[in-house]
Image (cartoon, rainbow, N blue to C red; front, side):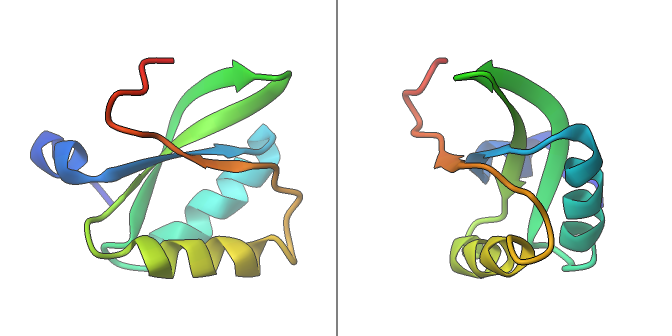
Length: 89
């Protein structure tokens, strides 16, 4: 799924801690939900964990969080952090 720049600006940004193998699995599952979210390979390291950027579509945050909780049963995922609009880290 491709998200244009306008939709990215409107999206809710989350950072998900996962290793590279897991993020590929998460990306394939998230991609199956049309219009839910876009997993990016943009990452940052926080507290020794690699955290990947996820753009969640407006109005889809609750469903996204439910999907992540179900995925935790099948994947080794770390913390999920919501980026606040003024977060510059």
